[in-house]
Length: 296
Image (cartoon, rainbow, N blue to C red; front, side):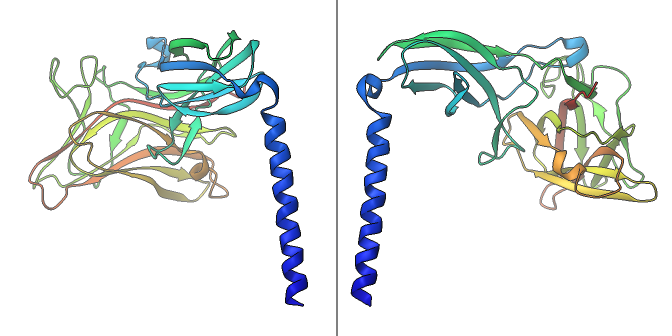
């Protein structure tokens, strides 16, 4: 019985090996084993400042399609081998790290792809250089807070012991423009909590929070969800120290907004407690955007 099983197993693995070998040979028949190359240095964002806010972005990947066939996802800068010749339709979708996590990458659903017909030749390189993307026309900006006006679209909650204030003009603490939003914690002001100043209807579409931030104190990002009779406060992400540099993050709110049946509206919140080992600490925010896809 054992001999029969062993023979069957050997035959199965031999059959599987033959299939893989045939598939591999078919993929690289003829001249297709010699690739052409596409190179991309980086990808930036262009915006209409008055209606779309800052052009600050962190586009880390290129999702490559040739003739609507996915070639792969490549970290920028990238050198991409393509087993094709002649003129082909190339699409590059700008990619991000979701929630700042390297393992959760996606093509950002609000950025326009780069599209062009490109001549591909064996061993030659089609250098695309620095690409520029824009927000798709269907992008709906629910909130833009750049901290450039007197009014800030964030309200502290009753339990907060510190307010969010504007950095001084010309301050090295400002990310860009004239001001950023500063939260200063110390032994007398140990807790900060704020929400944005109005409700948003939960859409049937992806929803993201974009922001730039600097921090030497951990803080939390989440949402308040509002139903007919219930209010639910749901943390989404804990953000740690940025080690003296500014970071750009794309926080996915979508799954949380749809996780609780009966909830109709939402607001975002920020929460920070002074870390016990610190006497003074700071969190600085800039370029907050809540965006979704317009259904109109």
